[in-house]
Amino acid sequence: MARKFLYLVAAVIVLVLAGAFAYRLWGDRLMVAAFVPDSQFVAPAPRGPADYAGARLWYVRGAAQTLTLPDGAAPSPARPAERQAAVFFIHPTSFIDRSAWNAPDGNAKAEKEARDFIAAEANVFASLGPLWAPRYRQATFGAFLTDRPEGAKAIDAAYGDVAAAFDAFLRANPKGPIILAAHSQGARHLMHLLAEKVADKPVAQRIVAAYVVGWPISVTADLPALGLPSCTATAQVRCVLSWQSFAQPADMGYERRSYDTMGLVEKPRRGTPMLCVNPLIGASLGIVRRDDKTGRQVLTRPGVGAKCDRQGLLILDSAPDLGPYVLPGNNYHIYDYALFWANIRADATRRLDAFLTR
Image 1 (cartoon, rainbow, N blue to C red):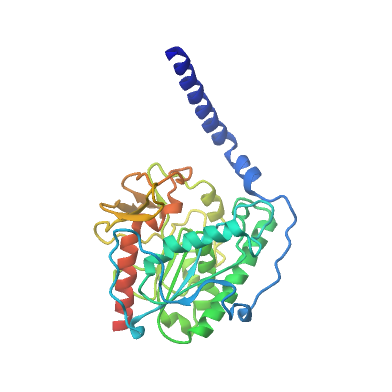
Image 2 (cartoon, rainbow, N blue to C red):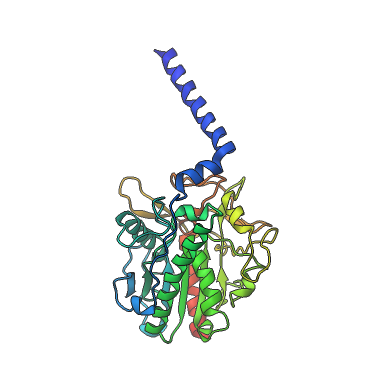
């Protein structure tokens, strides 16, 4: 019996090693085969600000922050209306189906995942002001894994929805401070939104801060086009924060391929440092984990330390066990907000208070 058990263990080890070896050799091809659509691109019907005038195309439309805080996180004091900011949040990719290049309206799985992302990430801005989180026909995950023109078209189509939603957001919020925040695909759209809709526009003076998290921004090829500098001081306003979380040894993998293209100012990104603004000010104030039994978010201490390296990655000082979604290359992309939840909350509060004081 013991011998059979040892044979079983040995077989499992061989399979794991073979799988790892296969991924090392053919990982790119496997990813493309699994996630990149093989269908023709069909452009979604364009949307304008009028389409976002009502509640139908919003997950949250100007509602007072009612998202649930993680267990263990004390509620912030209520802020009077004159000390609030309107928060515009763009959710990350939740559509991984290879049957279409863009998520169709009404896809139940993608919409549930989007709501979960908003609940887990946008809640960091709870109590700072009303939340606006648009529905957009996001590009499928595979669109970011291919050089085919269909992928770029799908990403551009998704951005078109976000841009229309932002125009409607500004019409509904003609004055007062604004916090912009996003993650992953949402951060890519926010980067372009800053360049097109904020830079050199009057609205730039209303921006408390822009949290462009989980999408690489070149310091030389992208940042000059955004119209806002990087955040270099704790109470600085009208600035950009961005980071990408990795443990050692770090390997960007596919992210490196997408980074090594032309930037927003028509300069190559290849070889240029990425923007990395460390969300930690001093010690970590806590890390959010998911309780396996209840499914609820739990804020726990101590958190994890991190430092920006020379190439612009945010390197964790340990490899915390947050769940099964750490990507190859020790990429903690999924947990960019959870790792620093309490510090982001304190950072946004501090910047809004500084904005209002000035």
